[in-house]
Image 1: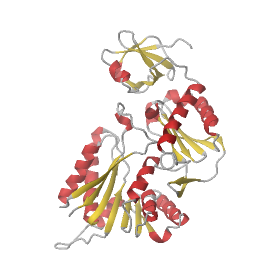
Image 2: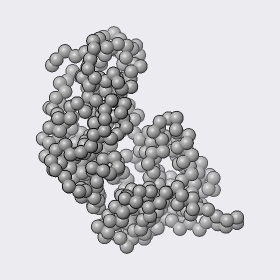
Image 3: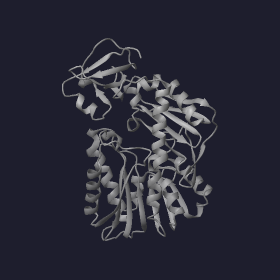
Image 4: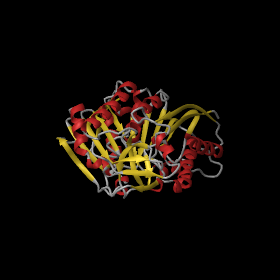
Length: 400
């Protein structure tokens, strides 16, 4: 192993790293012992020269070092193969029947800056750090050895790459691919556009929740807000809902959801609208003086995109969350269920629930919490790394 440059930490800054958080911020660095190219592997020591770990260095980033290991390791193809196999074993243990899932979830799997999603026999890779991006050939070699995929696709247009000095980069890295990828989620068939769809093509972090929420839908009228490709709506229809109506602003997403309903034999039980969900909810809750709303929905699902990307925008986000919950609660029957989700790391579960309860107070509704949700096990949570826990959700029954 080649001698490594050393990043010395300021007094008191090593404890968080030793406890398991993999990010060394610029403000935590005392000094670099010698000039080091960005992307290189460095060793990290505390201010007393005690070894802390090794990681990728990048002076351009606010995160100066992304820690890979508390030990001195050689970061080569064998290293990536070992780490990816370990991550895969976690998925096989906790999601044994899944054939499409997230294989590597960056910090959750001790590979900060790397995401790998598996859509049946196609892999999608994201590298959001310079060190990982420079080692794509090693990573691809490891993935081909483990999975023998039909194709490996790069989806590198995430905003965090800009902070690492990296340009966008999308396309096929290995193999061949034409058209969407047909996948199976909980026994339902979906066509996923891995080259042009949202994220890497689908929101895999809701895979377990699709089924759990669907279990609440039997016999009822279901409204799936922010439906995207129809995950909640289609699962509810299959589980025995009388009807599922899906809303999403994207006409392409609604077209895809409609096709998925037909492909799964659920067309007669599903309908869909391409519409601004906020506007739709507002229009269906407007009343004249002394006019009452007649609730028609037994289950409403709220799964919006993140309303906030930083702490400064949290107050605005909370107002948005309260608005959609207030209007959704007005449309729910007594005894009906609201299944609601928030995917912002900056809004924790307690704050999110308080926002829902504030909306319930304004709507003069009393709620009974019947379920608590989190991200699927292929997006593991490491409590010492709060950033790994972002998706939270609840199911509330309307008592009165």
